[in-house]
Image (tube, rainbow, N blue to C red; front, side, top):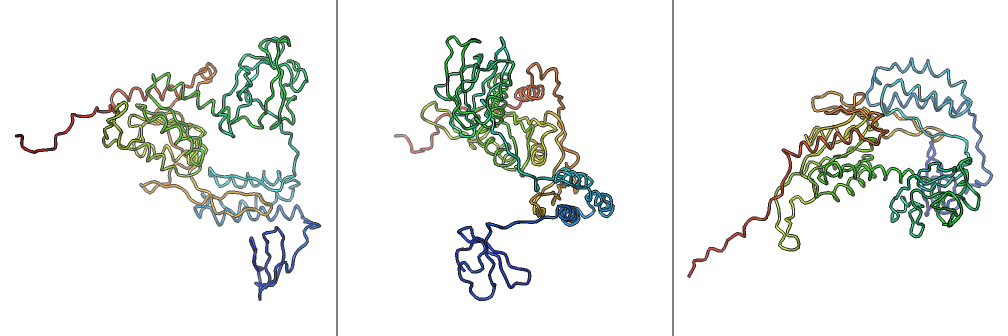
Length: 456
């Protein structure tokens, strides 16, 4: 049979279930050569009848078996799995909703005392969501009206970071008032977000003015976004970069690494190499969500300057070999919200003696999760498959984290005053290191004389 997308053989090997390219399904004999369409199933009236309690029992049994069969060490950190079964299995008899079962699975898996203890998904009822629109801004109430206190710039060339209020021709500025949305007047007695229901991704008319009344007001049309977290994140990163640039007098680069997956590599490559003219770098991995072992980032940070190639044109600034690198002192920022791959990154940074760690001890969850089957209703429960141990043959980092060389608290009073004590300490540390570790680029030496012909 041709044109199949997938198939599954029955347990006795006599039949197989197939899915065709036209999205049809069927059951055919495994022997011989089935014809296209043979055993086609009518799915339009298919119904699934579920015994919720029986399903919950099976899911809990599967979850228990996954810890028994897949956990990275056989002793399951000393947990008596038979005791865990006898303790928590009776709770399942009282499950009346998937959230009840999730609660039990969470508590049960928590008994393993491991960082990557996650329960996700499952057969929850569908709920309708109202796609409220957001303008990518902060509001403040002044003179009984809503005023734009801060407008996030975003990157309007990037489809994922478009800022509604900074699109060409909008010309809304910080300090302007928002007086109406789609002809509905707005004042401080109302919830501003209530006027943006169902506006995400749709053209929306705003009445704005630089004063709290309609005299001289103008109407602009914007397209609100459904999520502005990316705009706020980018603003935080850019604010940090500008702060480092200001505090260091332009000497230090700033690079934030949000995770050790795709986004982390994208951020690192974009921000690090664009600042390779700096004398040192602050690598900020606070809030790093992990992903993989980011050895590539460590290899780039540990690069050594081998020499130069002269440049006879333009500014005549020699090319460095290796050219793509920052060769002065480097400091890494860490905190308790960085974990998994975000634990491994500072561990490797210290192992390679690249520079000091500043901030707070990392989360302490360095185990790998892979290869564990899903649960019956589409949910998952993790049973970590691999734990990290060091070159001394000792389990490391998991449940311990990576401690900073210089511990700095995020003092709430200073933070509320606009300071970032950890970032400021990192800059101070890097500048002090720069006094003795600055790599000063050498000028081109005198032209070599290599022709040894005798003079006439």
